[in-house]
Image (tube, rainbow, N blue to C red; front, side, top):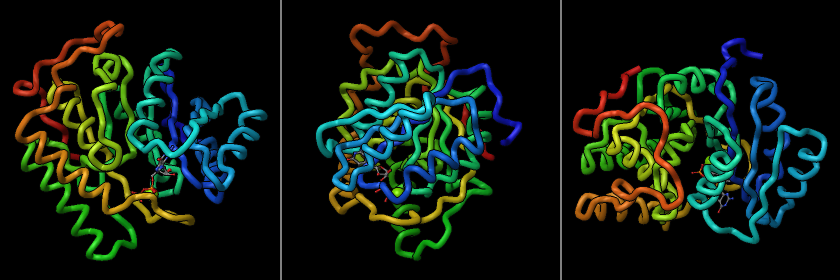
Length: 271
Ligand SMILES: Nc1nc2c(ncn2[C@@H]2O[C@H](COP(=O)(O)OP(=O)(O)O)[C@@H](O)[C@H]2O)c(=O)[nH]1
Ligand SMILES: [Mg+2]
């Protein structure tokens, strides 16, 4: 157990799953080896391989673990939003998101938590000093690096890794965003959340991570997801993002400090 994991903030780790039976039990065990004081929510889309049942069995033995079952594959973006809503409804201060496939090593959780003490969104970043990818072909590096540069350049986002999905959000900030306006599902979802947070003047910070290839099982990312991200960036460059301006119905604004707008927002730390 890393002694850096201690915080007065209540945290939830949200993990979306679709066919992760070979990974999920070991991942949950690994997470609790690094951190004891967190709850964990798995959002499973009725995985045909029985991932949901495995999580139910773990949840029956460990009160820190909850399983949320959706009827079918409804997409990654809506799974995250469901996790955010659960965190807001159940009074968590922080909600982490991470993949089930060991690409996001639990060993980085303490560093992300520590940074979250002074941030509204912390991103585990491959594109800051100390971060990177392991075992990636140059083609994959080119697509990922190019995609990030494309999004940053067109939208002006200062975040170096805006597509990564290893993150921690502060729920007081999430409560001020109308999540029902977010349609993106894949990498575009991550870019959109980073964009909204930056535009709203929330504190976005990056912590270096080495991203590893999934251990077992298949990636669910497809060409469709890349095209969605490309089109989302172009459309947002032209028309802006409705969720940047909208205040959610039924959700009071955050009670925390009010930060300046994007123009005057503090620049992101280069780590
Ligand atoms: N609930 C849910 N989880 C999903 C869906 N698509 C992908 N995931 C999960 O989201 C995470 C990231 O997906 P993955 O296929 O590893 O994407 P990649 O890392 O970009 O190749 C994994 O934990 C998947 O099991 C979905 O439609 N619903
Ligand atoms: Mg993956």
